[in-house]
Structure formats: structure tokens, C-alpha cells
Amino acid sequence: MSLTADHLFDVRGLVTIVTGAASGLGLAIAEAMAANGAVVVLADRNETELKRVSRDVLPAAEIAAVDVADPDAIRRLTDDVVVRKGKLDVVFANAGISAGPGIVSPKGAIENIDLAAWNEVLATNQTGVFTTMQAAARHMKAQRSGRIVVTASVGGLRGAWATGYSYAASKAAVVNLVRQAALELAPFGIQVNAIAPGFFRTALGGGRLLDEAGTKPLEAMVPMKRIAMPREIAGVSLLLASPAASYITGSVFTVDGGITAA
Ligand SMILES: NC(=O)c1ccc[n+]([C@@H]2O[C@H](COP(=O)([O-])OP(=O)(O)OC[C@H]3O[C@@H](n4cnc5c(N)ncnc54)[C@H](O)[C@@H]3O)[C@@H](O)[C@H]2O)c1
Image (cartoon, rainbow, N blue to C red):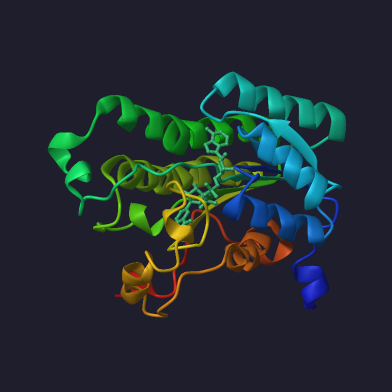
């Protein structure tokens, strides 16, 4: 096996779906895959932003308006991609929403958690990730190969004041869903891993993370003393989709400037 970077990180021609691809980390993942020759389908519930990205950023990529909270929609998408492209190599189950204020805020205190809002977060962050994995695995099992990469969060690995209850619960759940699926799917040649980001400058949580002044306290909590840019997720995403990850499954990769080292 060649050990050149060209070979190790060769994702050329890999048919790849990225959910939550109209913005932030999903868009950065899609850009990294497309820049390296993958055939990328951008899936997101925000059709307006998808069209903008398709026009201004990734004209070669296909777009699909899909709400991952609708299991039929994500299943239809994977079926359609396999019918048209003949295979499905990589799925990034990345779409996610914030739970609103963290437990440090009175609104995020346990007695104030509204179950409708709780269920809305779980529908996307937990059930949406599971049904995306399920839809991908159906095809990948049949072809006996594939990679599934879930965007979890350091908020699912430990308690944190800035994190809301439903976000913490859903992100912890997907970490163990990844491990469960890695066990079941390994004999089928399917590898399943998670990326657990720390703080990234994206639109998550209504733009709170885009506010440079407002995020100074968050930066102070990070050993590297800064918030990451979305493109800093690209390297690990490419790794997990590529031949370089040939023996990696059931793993969780933190990309957090050292937060979880503390
Ligand atoms: N930004 C961070 O600091 C951070 C940290 C840890 C984990 N994450 C995770 O990264 C992932 C991407 O978030 P981001 O930071 O890029 O935020 P973002 O808001 O910039 O992007 C999220 C995208 O997902 C889409 N989306 C949301 N719900 C959807 C649904 N039900 N169906 C389809 N698309 C949906 C949105 O329309 C948006 O385009 C999420 O899972 C998030 O929890 C982000």
C-alpha cells in the first residue's frame, strides 16, 4: 500500500451525502470532500441557503432539501442517490440544532425545560442522526462497504455550563449510537465514527458563536484560547472518509482546542 498523502487521503469519486450542509461545519465538510474529488450531495432543510451555496460556493455539488427529522425524507434521499449514482460511499450525519441557553442561564435550568423544545432537539440531533445512519446502512450493508461519520459534540462527552439539557442528552446518545453501529456494521465493511467538535464559529444557536465579543468568555475556557473556524473540521472529516482510516471504527475524534484534555 502506498503511503503517500495522495493515496492515503484519496476520496476521489466517493459518493458522499452531507446533512446540514448549507452552513457551518456541514458546508466545510462538503467543501473538503468536493475539493478532493468526491461526488457530493448537500442535504439540508434550508432550501434557500442550499441554493445560495450551490450558486456561490459549490456549483458542482447536488442539493437536496431534506429535513432529517423526517425519516421517510432521508430514506428517499439515500434511495435516490443510490439509484442515480449506483452506490453510497460516505454519509456525514451532521445536521444538528442547539438546545438554546445552557444550564448556566435561568432559562436553561432544569425546571424551565419545555418538553416540546426538548423533543424538537431530539428529533433532529438524535432520531435524525439515527434514521440517517439507518438509511445509509441499508445500502452500505448490501454493497458491503461504507463510512458513516456523525457530528457529535464535546457537549455529549461531559457536563458543561454552556450546554442545554436536550443538546447534552442528544449528543451523548449519538456517541453511543456510533459505537453500537460500529459493532453491528463492522462485519459488513462499514466503519462508523464520530467527530466531537468544541466551539466553532458557525450559525448554531441563533448566531451566538458568531459574536466575537460575546464569545470571549468561551474562548477563555479553551486551552488554545480561541474558537475554531469551520474549515478546521476539514482534516478529520477527510481522514474518516479516506483510506487513511482503514482500521478506525467506533471512535470519537475530539476537535476542541484541548477542552476535553482538562
Ligand atoms: N458550532 C459548534 O461550535 C459546534 C460544536 C459541537 C457540535 N456542533 C455540531 O455540528 C453540527 C453542525 O452545526 P453547525 O455548528 O455547523 O451549525 P449551523 O447552524 O451553521 O449548521 C447546521 C445546519 O444544519 C441544518 N439543519 C438543522 N436541522 C436540520 C434538519 N432537521 N434537517 C436538515 N438540516 C438541518 C441547518 O439548516 C444548518 O444549515 C451540528 O450537529 C452541531 O450540533 C457544532
